[in-house]
Length: 109
Image (cartoon, rainbow, N blue to C red; front, side):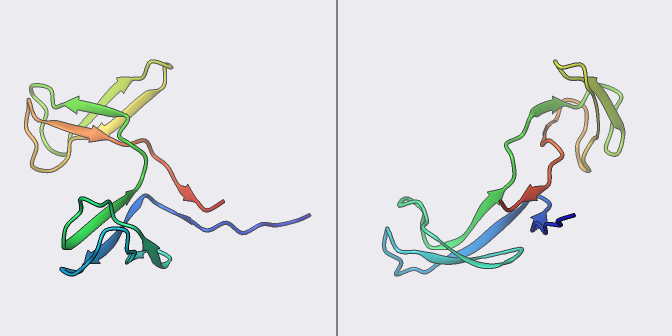
């Protein structure tokens, strides 16, 4: 029986600082969950903190229905028939919208 080890993590982000004297095309060091990594910022990014999301795109945008408030559970059925349950995030009220990202685990392959 062979065993394999995989580096895995929940969705997260890389954070980097772009120096005021940074030139387009130069790499910067971003700090991530498994250490530092060099990234090349987009040419239009300016000096300051930049964040790179390591997560899938949102699957849904949901409007908080009347009578629901932060912490309440919302259930709905996807096109494939699977029932999804999400909680209304803190600070939201009926009419507000929020994005729902699929539950995933990021795996290094």
